[in-house]
Length: 565
Ligand SMILES: [Zn+2]
Image (cartoon, rainbow, N blue to C red):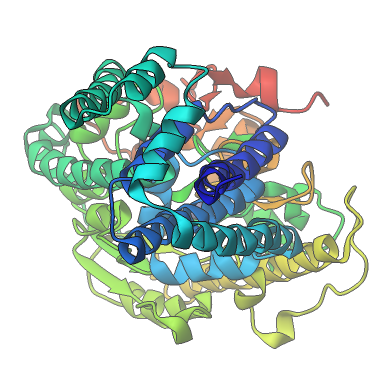
């Protein structure tokens, strides 16, 4: 067999090998069959170009470049699919972009496991041999022989081109044939311009473009919100009563690991001691399983039913308009690769503090860093205040979330997934929850310590979304594609120094609630009135009406995700 034939054979192997590995992993992990014909077509096109490069060295470099970049991209997607059990889409790319770079490196450390390492070897080892083989073949090939070989290979499919080729030795005819081939490719591209859209690179690029548009929209929304009916009709509080509320936004904490929610380990000893001063709402879920889409609804008028309502404004703008001084105190990194949307929302606050500015050494930014700033903010003279405290909570990597003296859960935890990896993750997660309990109870202590006579004080603690730590799936983390109930079911705890308040709401703790309506709950307990207030969507209101909780676009959480009790 002439060498150019080898080249052709290798080339196919070449393009198909990583793509077939990807195809296999996608089918295995997502349970959906994935036929990568569009990706194959795209790669065929790229390789086809190689046959027109007559310089062997150049051709060899080109082919290797295409192959190596395919390998890298394929490996990235294989790793992604095997962790998240979904393909890269513009919205997953969106989340990757929103996540800041030090979080990304935490993700890598968290998820770079043996399975992914094995996939890397599966992709890499044969690829090395393929590259060596192709390199040899390229050394032997001539432009003319390769042309001929291509058409020989396509003979069965495109007999007429083959016959034209064989019958004519005339260079004009060769050009005609070449023109025809390019014409066919051109036409098929014209009729199906979407081949490239199935490629991870395109998906990521597209996600980035959409992200930029979203950030722009956000800026416009908050400019537009100045005209919103809701904000324009807020009645400003003119009384001199001192009032302070702290809204503590946790991170990746599922209610299923909190002692006060019935978890078998006592992960919340401090909150348990305060049990008489707290209301623990049992049935609250987040609208999403990721920070940004969830907080976008928690912190603005946007809801699942009406996402565009974010242009009516944010919770910060609402309470500020009502006469509260607003503080944003965050232990989360303020900027990702770009500004994150949460920081854009936070910008409306009168005062903002970021205790964690990112970078390698900041990965372990313990949440207690917010405490001195909370203390300082409570001491200011303003009579009406709302403090937002955004914690790192129990975000991966869990072991970076607590100091050594909170490393208390070390025995074998209960899980259906009996691997050391699962045991370690659960123990570290529970230690992080234990530390989170300390931080929240310290915030309550600070409130108490700074109370002035007759001051009304309240605190709400909720998490942006939950987390599944080897509870229902062999996995730890959160992903909308898996979307298990521990990823949606969040803690929602209310504290007040007013006994009457606690009594008023005590019978409401079993209400089914989704925190996309959170803005109405806060407006309600602060007695903020405005046109468009929906008291039926406040968990604290006597007018409350329970409604369908739709997640993942169209899924009824209570029917399809929540386990039957
Ligand atoms: Zn989150």
